[in-house]
Amino acid sequence: MSESVDVQYASAVPELPNADAIRQWSAAALSGTNQDAELTVRIVDEPEIAHLNQTYRDKVGPTNVLAFPADAPPEAGLKLLGDVVICAPVVVAEAQTQGKPADAHWAHLVVHGILHLQGFDHQNEPQAAEMETCEVDILARLGYSNPYEAGDPAAKPGG
Image (cartoon, rainbow, N blue to C red; front, side, top):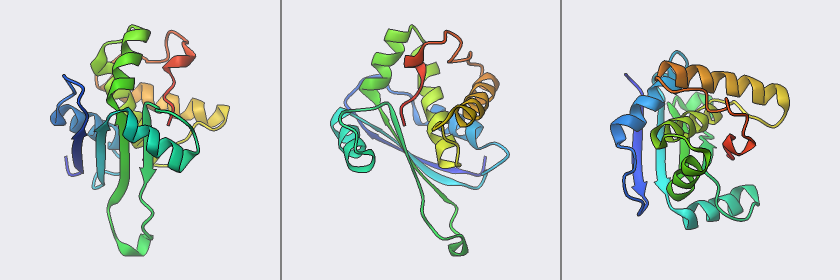
């Protein structure tokens, strides 16, 4: 795999996914499109993501995942895709509430964030359907079940 994924840990939550797993999920999300991409996946606690959510989305409180696409001009020739920030306490709580294996929910949020970096969004139904189809396909290749199967609206990532 030729992409470069910088994994940063800034969370006190125990039993976080290891960097190799995060890189594997990232590679699957980048497969065939941005294989030379560089990105950061940062695992944080609620205060940091709440601050980012307020500052950049004008929303109060923590969310599960935020994506910050790089804003470099194409002529710069940079491979930088951007940053994905994931809130560990929110992910753990959501996995428990939704009855999902923690690693499956982590994989989903990493994939979701990286798809945002690649221009996918869920602002309307057609966009959401396209993004969810990509997520389900990528997660299936990784051996995870469809995170939307139960039809639980709480299963939808926030960022």
